[in-house]
Amino acid sequence: MTLSKAAELTGLARATVRRILLTLKASGFVHGDDRLFSLTPRVLLLASSYLASNQINTVMQPLMDVTATEAREVCSLAVLDGDQVVFIARATPTRMFSAGLEIGYRLPAYCTSVGRALLSRMPDDQLRQTIEQMSLTPMTPQTTIDKEAIIASIIAVRSDGYSLVDGEAEQGFRSVSVPIRRYDGSIVAAANIGGHVDRIGVDEMKDRFLPLLKQLAATVQPLLV
Image (cartoon, rainbow, N blue to C red; front, side, top):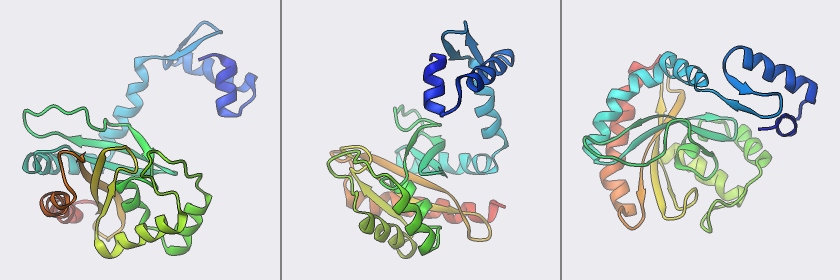
């Protein structure tokens, strides 16, 4: 990326961006020739440090491995970061390879099952304010962008105990998610299982995968502090 592009994307002055990039270069996180800059593999230290120090990952990973094996599908874990969800853990069934949602992958919160599960932790007034401030861009022809409908679907998660989103974040892909709570009942993450619509139906999502996810959430709650 050029210095000018970095300044444009960050909204910072070119001189400020240059100082930051040179600092990152001196620290080994960026490579550059004063015209073009790129990240180095050293930035992975930041991600690995987060994952290693995050209690949720440490506690959840072995339990997610069991869930993925029983479901014979990929199980993913996400947390809320602003208006987006970021996936921080992933479990794959034994001997099964799947492209899936990789760790670090981001999606809009409003149109994903994990996002709606996470947003359900907000009180009604905060939830409404959050959704009203979002810029809703359709991800697929099925994406709901009616803010009242989105708010209603998020509020429903509280009574239903889960969120099921059908083709809104990615066309032809549906997923079911449950909130992950810590010992005091606070929602700290969301776990999901998803699949392509031509392979996994809505009934199978509810009948086969939802009980596994609910069991996962119940098992982990007293372990998260």
